[in-house]
Image (tube, rainbow, N blue to C red; front, side, top):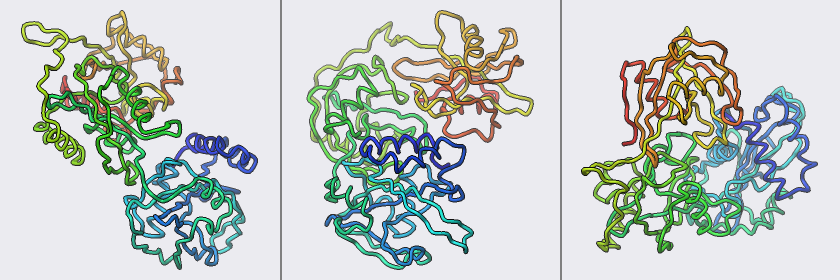
Length: 486
């Protein structure tokens, strides 16, 4: 689905933070974003959003193409959004692929802009009686990309809309606003790492891997094992800062020793872009079960010979094995498990409770969690909560009232499924079904949930918390227990 007005406004405000003098020029766009209309739709008048790709090669030249619709003017590739465009940046990538035949994998982000538009251009569009369109305005979001390779790829023009191509030096870019911002940004066309990852090892041949959340289409390497780390932000002064910030956000208690740059690896982003990743190697000898994990599912030690059985990118697998070959074990003892009792490790487990409601049509009630929620932001999930100093049933009754205004009697509830999930605090996720209840689901904690909605069991929304989907399927099949991630 197209980007929301909320996400577009965040992009606009970020641009205005860099160019505050342009607020008056974008006042119409900001007003439209506050209204009910979809500003990404071509039918929205008198103005709507478009997206363009500013592609720069190693000679600092900018790709321009001749659009037939503009009487052969040289412009950067771009046009209207389509319903399948998940973000504005994705729309720009689609346009350059369609109009010039350059795929996302041949492009990469720049350190200076990191996926933010360099310019939001406002321009008038003449009426087109043949298309039934009156005169209107375009708010064009312009995204800069470098070529990932040394040589420009073969440009394959879209004959219906494009009649020619030309690489122009930045001082000759045809848009005055774009030209000024390109020259001010100092873009040299040479890719450099914009992500940082941690290759964590214990010195004895084990490597720490992070199992990522199940959020396909939303996060990179969804539901796969990966290195800790992430993308650079505009506030990071260096890639060392990027790594430190990412580790503090993901695993705040992790403290690495002997951290140093190890390798630069190429990866592919969720949008298909080529990404250079600066990998830092660092040593740690602790027990991952004692770490607080704020993002993802779990952390585990693995040896190189165990990697083939994991869902893991081939590049990460090769990286770990290369590091292991170059750094033989030092045979120092690793940290012992936290508690031992007769040879069995004893750890604290938590209890989560979840409400499984089905309406008369057999549809299941799910809530869309707020994007800023600490857990599963922007993802569909059961009505749920963690047990405090109370019984599981008391917790369920309390959460149903606090979150959705539903009144449930304990005698009307039955335990229908248990999902056993690992993590720094392993959780037994108890799923209770209420046979009857009073009230209509309403949003009562807007900082946690945006909406409640009934979903057919065979048409569940995406993204959805992975163990929620597992539980719904298991309940339909009559299975009382599942384990996920062990």
